[in-house]
Image 1 (spheres, rainbow, N blue to C red):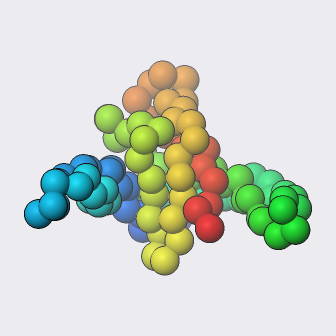
Image 2 (tube, rainbow, N blue to C red):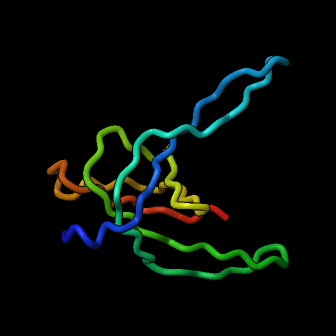
Length: 105
């Protein structure tokens, strides 16, 4: 992959849980890693549900290999949030990851 194709600076976040003063669990997202990546829409689909229109966009995010990335994490790109559906280690060579994501709406 050419270096110029990875022009999007992303933040990979993981969820952490803590208890507040009342003992209730609260979830917060914290930074796990940052990387330069390529963000490519794979396809878009529209569907109607309960008289409301929802748009789900499938996106592939290509980045250098980072150990420990899981489907429980998410990607932040500016104001946009992507939920990670699948993590693919290309050819199991630990050089590149493809994250198959759905944009969080």
